[in-house]
Amino acid sequence: MRTARAISLLLLLQARRSMTGAELAAELEVSERTVQRDVLALAEAGVPVYADRGRAGGYRLLDGYRTRLTGLDRAEAEVLLLAGLPGPLQDMGLADPALAARLKVAGELGGAPSAGARRFHLDAPGWFRDAPAPPLLAEVSRAVWGGLLLRVDYRRRPDAGPVERLLRPAGLVLKAGTWYLVARPEEDGAEHRVYRVDRLVAAEPSGRASAPGPADEAFDLAAFWEARAEDFARSLLRETVTVRLSALGLERLPHLLEPVAAREALASAGPPDGEGRVTVRLPVESLEVGYEEILRLGPEAEVLEPPGLRERLAGAAARTAALYGTPQR
Image 1 (cartoon, rainbow, N blue to C red):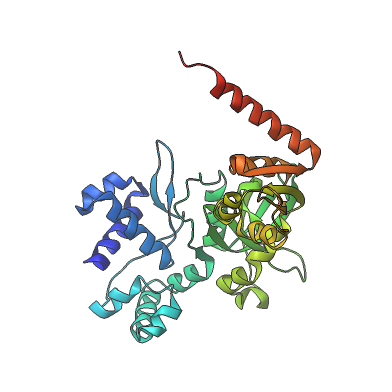
Image 2: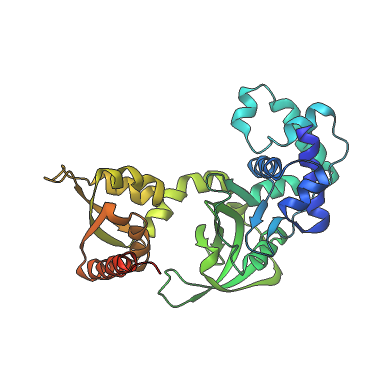
């Protein structure tokens, strides 16, 4: 029943482009919570479905994605939703029917499903984090799915000016609510790199097909992401803040901050002082980002350096104290 319902959900989204959880629940005669679980199952199987937040939000498929599910027997259909999880399939003895399903669907769609698997990768944790889709995601996904060169203006850092690049897209990755483009600059010998889609200030598919070279044909998006994701996250951490944390602050750190930053901060922790607090060196993307992240820790964190950030947080604390010190009317 769940497989049939999830396939119905997929076909509904393909036909109507975007539907709210309530609309899908009404169509499928299930609860909205069941819809959310089915959407997550599709996502984990490699189907590029994601949630748009806000008043006009809902669930939708990545622009350009289409499928046509016919000719599958029961066993093949039951494992189709697990086709993006080769390790568990092997462990459960379902590798053979999964391969048969891929070949059958690929034959009907001229190889589109296998191409789609190469061009989309889900790093599942945080899939439903409340984050808006980047404004230029549709243009980027059109280039990815269409195999087109993509001309972009890209900011390496939030405070940096944009640089123009002509890219050969390899795929899209959704990690904890943030979209990343993996692409190779259109230059001889250039390697694949990672670009945050929300830092694109312009993106235009060139209309010219991207003729793949040997490096592109052998490219494995999932393997690349696994190897490079941590290095990419670390490369964004360009500033360091010295923070004094309570025991509760230490406990909350891995849950509130970027995992790479949290691990490096915890590794730098010294012994507790007389008040039971420990001092760590926390890497952050920028002092602006550091300000926002440390605010989330509230009174469990005290910035020691740099002085400018300490003064700014002291001002925020004073304004908060003034609000709570004002008698209610």
